Image (cartoon, rainbow, N blue to C red; front, side):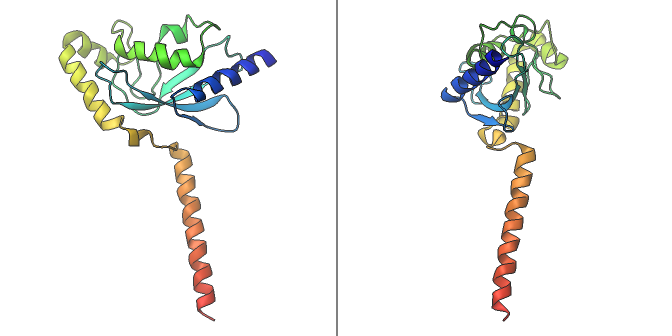
Length: 184
């Protein structure tokens, strides 16, 4: 089992050394977030998404699980869960692929060439087939509303509330200490 473990570490390090921002979810190397920018010359250009990546124990022999955290309007991405329908990840995955392939090739191709005939978001697929200009306008609206750099922030929601709580506790502790010495 050390071979999949070493490969997981190597692929993750390679991704971290590339231009992608990677945030670890916990101490292990199996769950993390990656900040992903929409490809140029697409209606997604300018958008920034946080993707949750989970590597199974059998990675690279089994594909990673990938989902959008912030909303994206795309026929092959479930709008509620962020799940991605991409054959190369879900069905034809090979150990020859790595995480950099996912973010430099597979996901940009998904955004550039949506497959309306195999949708997870039926509304987006129908709009794309019926009126491509309106579809691209809706994509841009979603980018503007949900995929700005500040929308992916530095910290996942569950962590940021803990940090705010810690800062509040720290601040209230300082106030108590400052108030204590002033009274005597």
